[in-house]
Image (cartoon, rainbow, N blue to C red; front, side, top):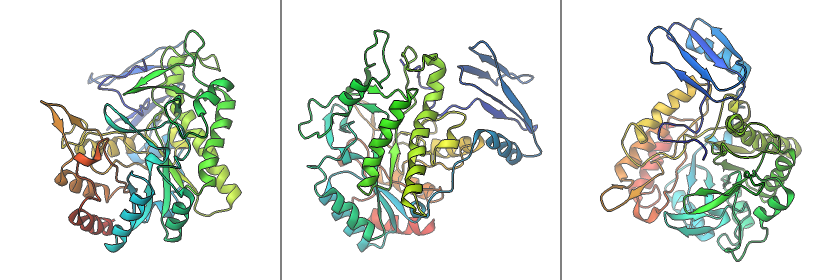
Length: 408
């Protein structure tokens, strides 16, 4: 429904540069196809009523990219806290975090933050452990949430969480305090289908609705959700998804959903960035909040603070494994995305009778070596972490993490 297949990307950019130091990029958001296969021409098809773009020329790739990002935007300098050590991605609740933090302290591993994507609570599905997409802390799973954040901060460690622009009905979750899906539905700030109802999209084992950020009220409402996180002491979050606006959606703005599909990632990054800037100004802190995204388009670097490369396979392969993480860094940099990183060890797994991809210790350690030289070093559990090697499972990987972090 969102127009994806194996060859598509979370973050396309209608821009290219050549070895002859020429460059071109399209303005606007219409669907376009670039054919770079012919030796004597570049063919561009744009599905719209008009075409606008710019041709750039320079003496070097750096000059071309500088000119390009001068128009499309650049991210701010990251706060020092997120580059001072590992961003440890883990799940399991309050006591699990405290236990792991003690273990890492015993090994003198520099840690900048704990990234706790399951702060909203865990739900068991067909693909493993997933999250409740209702952006408030689960007080049962993370009992003493504010105390945990305060204690980590006292030790110089920040707390990061997770959210995305989608919501799920909470009828099956007994301890939900707010039902954000119902609130958004009542306010009329969800993407609608052709019948005018909330557009419910399949996502692995459950259906989700998307916030309609072409509606200013949706942006204001979601900033309130982010403020709730920050008020509890959270210093950053993964701003996941944003690439999947359905091509037959109905939007508040009335615009063509095919073009809005490309604009939506920028709107998603923008609402997060506007809140982060507002919070920094109000709090008067030199080091502000950090969020990171995977979805993007031409001007996403104007709004996004940091990218990551999305959900890569726990494999050695070039198409979507560890090798692709290097290709993604290079391609992103040449497309105006300077601050980027990947999940150490990859994320996506396969566990079928005749096809199995599991994260091995060797893969994890080699991926950690690669990521020691990226702007942010962040680990990530896989959907079923008990069957895969994780950075925190044994003394060898913790010690390896210590030496690897010191390299950076």
